[in-house]
Image 1 (cartoon, rainbow, N blue to C red):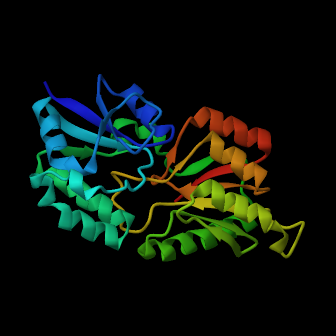
Image 2: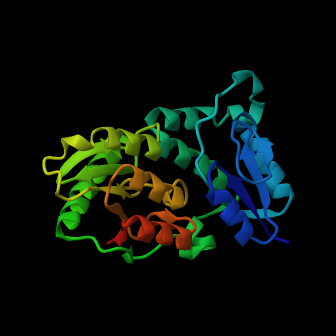
Length: 265
């Protein structure tokens, strides 16, 4: 019987996907600490791991959650995995997106089909619409500015978010992540020229050309709390391109904090 394997990363996404699947096999890189019980595997033994999946009748794989680059220990490579190391290392040198694509290619060449998160749980990736609050004209301008910034940074493989207020970019997302970006933006909120003007917003979107089967930006109730703490007016994201976890809680928290949530086309 065909089975689905879940490759669990960090954060709340993996538990949500695990709950939606029928008896999945759950694995995680042994360098990670996912919020679900998972069997560990190592990148240095990727080919034997793929054999194990196939031996257990797995035909489909879904990746869920943040996956940090593991520390590679060369002495642990088996002979067959060594043959694909140049491809993976070349991808790593080109950036996270290229590294992930290289790994996905290896999975698919083994006969495993990669499922995207929205194929498993479509409601996790909202389409166009305002879910809470009401962004005003100045927010629309800030959203357009932030979208242009994230789109321009995409080819550099830096991050998937930006904070913009009154047309000014207060921060962009980098390796430390969204919370660090928002904390930085809060420290520099005084740079906004009009204290009574638009409070600003967090914008999230996939990188242009990103493989959307893996590593989609994710927001949720924690993000809402962080945006509120940063003194911003709301969260905007690319419709159909961002995962919204615990939608009801996130919407309720946004309304309570007086923030808007907007999936922008």
